[in-house]
Image: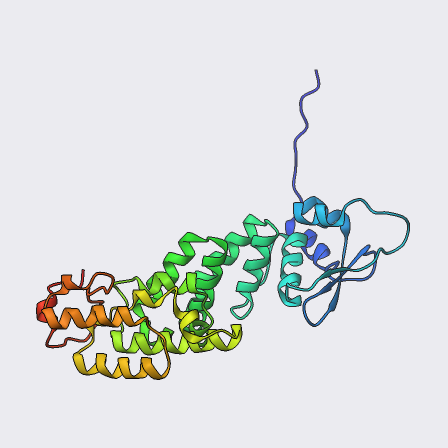
Length: 291
């Protein structure tokens, strides 16, 4: 009886290099994608994409007739990110960049490429910084990437003031902003957090063409107004009359804390201090220290 043959392997590098030479190469290609807002043409090979990725297998289907079929339009993925996905599918390796890794991660999730997703997640954690963290948090919340969300929140907690000043913070969705405002560990004072929330709501109002208060409604309940001193609360109340942001009843609950000199007087107006809360005279009667 003949014994089973032995599988032997040649060098992987020349094989990978040869396949990389086919990347976005019109020669021998049989499918063309029109990618991104810039509508860049990208050439590929149907059999390779179909055998490597179920998404492309379903998208491309069986080839019909001779010649090059009509281009496949993928307008939502940027060309650079799409080319990175193809590089991974062709060579099982990919060169990632800080400025585009979140777009590659998004494509990997949408195309069901788990290995590429994990590579992107690992890279994001290595390059995570103040400018990138809010954008990464948004991606994590959008696609339910729990470990990445936890790491982003922990990073923002440690670098709160810097993160609140980034464009990425202003572009967060309400579901992404909520876990930040619920955190006790933010290293920022409540007065500054109220200002940041107002700036965030203004940007959202301009983009969505909705009132500031309507945009802010899902998140402002997490602001701990009772932590503000009476003078700060009065100034906030005056500004709120000019530009509504916070429900009047929420401000009233904060005033109750001051009037009754009890933190438990504020149902729905949390009094628990955050890590970055600056001390104020009235905090002594709130009796709810940072945990």
